[in-house]
Image (cartoon, rainbow, N blue to C red):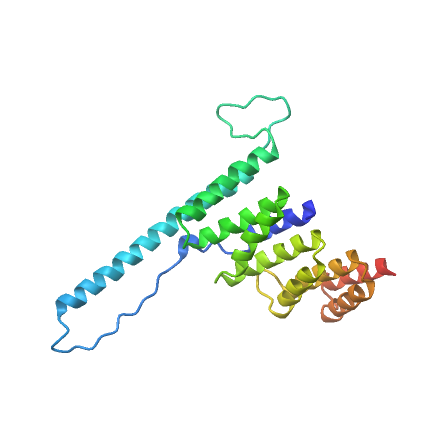
Length: 241
């Protein structure tokens, strides 16, 4: 996975995908008919149980969201120049690997402690892309697949895009192609149709399928005649000639 692509995926995930973990709302409906058999006391017990469950989930989401923000900050922590000692009042890391390892521990802790929160899904996504960064394709595929199958449609699409990029870099062209086509047919706010189209064109070009790459780029150009995507497609088409 190319460095610029990985960086873009991280930025897209953090900027495009809404941080819903701290705002998640539990919805419920209490249905009952007033009869002589159902007493007010029973209704009160049911309501108390529901309110207790809502409070618990809300608290878990809030804690998970805070921990997630700390883990993301760890990924953005500066690196010290080679040979420089750590400063007591300034957080730094000696290497990118040390920084990534520290962040991965934090993301994994969120998954373990708050498995049913949106922040846990986000944390697992970051586990996937950082595993890919470190060359652990098996772990990256496992985590990204799990996020891709989650109920969070926006985040799932970003995970599919990252997974397709992982497959492409691993020469699993058919698997990558299938995911890009799925994203083209079912675009989201996080991953637009044109984004998936351009990635698919790159896949075809890198796998020696210039005819297919040209077909996709011409489609992008036709569908976006005056936009930036159309201009990019025109430029890439010129490179293919």
